[in-house]
Length: 509
Image 1 (cartoon, rainbow, N blue to C red):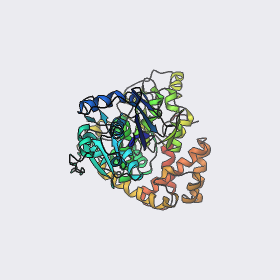
Image 2: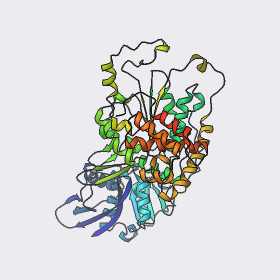
Image 3: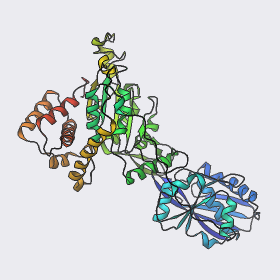
Image 4: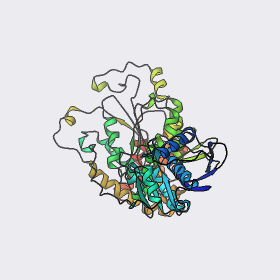
């Protein structure tokens, strides 16, 4: 007999419904899976046969062929175990085949017939709803994740036997309901813990308000990492649409916390400097998201920037410019989102103490060593970083002060107000913050008065800026004006933006 069930896999950051077509006929015993399965899916035939047998069901020895359609896309999800088992049972006439036509099945099977959770349930459930399916059957670990999607019933399975009994009408299963979400404890990272460093905190506030990238240069122990780790705490709260996007990405990557559920905090990713190019940008035979995508709608922090390999850093150019990364492989070309804020930190020289004579340290690096160290970061990459600031050593008086610094909540309130102004101004262009503006949008939304234009011309010639730097200075100045609550860019706004662009003494090319 022939039967069909529905499973799923992921393609990029989206789900894809797979037609599991099963044909069982008399002939030499065989069990073949076709339709571009990878190793995990090919091995499912052993798990499925033993799971069925250990669930108390005996199958005749027949010639079985299973086709996974569309055949042109590689399938790599062990979650196809359950739809293969259900299709096989329907092909043998052990459960009604017509009852499978409106349901999606997603679970890995143990040899004993238990249902195990899989990655990517959220995007696959969204795809099922969009395709008109009315129910999804998942393992208990994936229930909260699937319940994030409205308009489709979610059933929880613990064993294959439960599914068989349900479709035979011998067991009742009620749709799962969302559990009362526990109040999430707020992170302990707060700008109130950072004493001093007022200029650096101001720069990060501007970066958060406009979505700008930041480079911090300072001596060891000046607080660069401490500042960067608090960047997420001053970003606007995730909207539900943004939270769903982030949760989809983490679902596919298998990084959701136990129990699943919606991610409500903006991501903060801090990969080690030994991270490979593929881990940073994403890839693999079936492309998976990398760090630039895992930090989507959040912060990607690169500490000790010159210690990263040059290849790893250079692949950041496209995602920083396009806010997306396209990965081409033999079987598919996929685009992953990467709308993140890049925050980088580095020492001014190999020993770390160049320019810190006032702190009692003498730099023993030669000019050649300093140049070689800073030139590990290419001019085109630096050009894509809007704000360049020097982070000085913290003074004793600042560290010993008893008055607590301004909290992240107070800074976030100003950031959210500035973001609202930007959304209203950029709504006709379908943009959300200033860093997303291109040259054409800048010309239309950021007119400069003659005195401001003269100041910008002076800076352009003095610092030998590129066309990209010209645009980025205007975007930062526009953000400073938004924080000030003004509609026009004033000379003081532009002057601060220029200082934030030229404060590190690095060669910008």
